[in-house]
Amino acid sequence: MSLQSLALIDNWPVPTAAAGVVRADGAVLGVRGPVGQRFALASVTKPLAAYAALVAYEEGAIDFEEPAGPPGSTVRHLLAHTSGLAFDEHRVTAPPGERRLYSNAGFEQLGDHVAKATDIPFAEYLRQAVLEPLGMTSTSLEGSPAKDGVSTVEDLLRFAAEVQAPRLLDPRTVAEAMSVQYPGTKGVLPGYGHQNPNDWGLGFEIRDSKSPHWTGGSSSPRTFGHFGQSGTFLWIDPDAGLSCVALSDRAFGPWVIETWPAFTDAVLAEARTA
Image 1 (tube, helix red, strand yellow):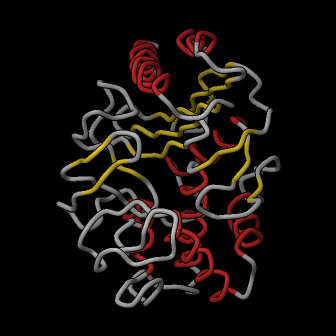
Image 2 (cartoon, rainbow, N blue to C red; image 1 turned 90 degrees about the vertical axis):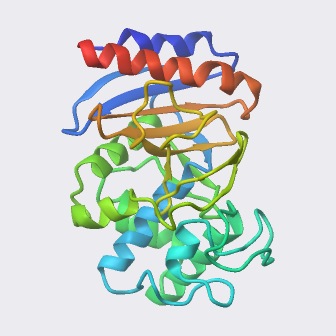
């Protein structure tokens, strides 16, 4: 089968877009556009980086509760955007655990921490721990673990299938990563304003009851994933048993707020009746 709802990307006001949907069992329900084309991921890089950190945790190289980042912060704080670091500066703006301060700097310090613990440059560790085992041969990290990944829809569908039915990690570790860390923490969801609470797992944003939001009105509260400022997203809806990836080459803006939720609702509606 091939989901007809994916054709909605043809109407997006972008030069190029590609999308795909994969079930928890790895079956691809449909693709649209140049799914083998490499796109800049922007912050969709973070779930890949987080997954590599989870591998490092299971290998015993790091521990969630060990110090990392600014004084008083831990690996868990960095993954959950509660270290207190500023958005794009290595500057402390709040005590650890107090606020959900979305931070690229935090993920950069996470990458440095994993690299030091494993004695492997983080981009190489990501390749060995996640990309190579999943056959993600068109994906690379070309700078910051917060935002400089490059990948394809084909590769990210492999990753989305893995997260839904883990082979590289113990499912309990993945379940922890998709669980709310520091419940009740307030913060700003980039592009969507203040959210109370602003729920987050370990490297993955959790939809919960956030409004407005980049996923659909029919997305389950357990939906988790990430979007990027380069016009990219990856969500996994455990209740629907599927994941959707969409990549484009137009920066995040009002067009996203108009198109992405309706697209997601259409995909979910069609998949439920398929």
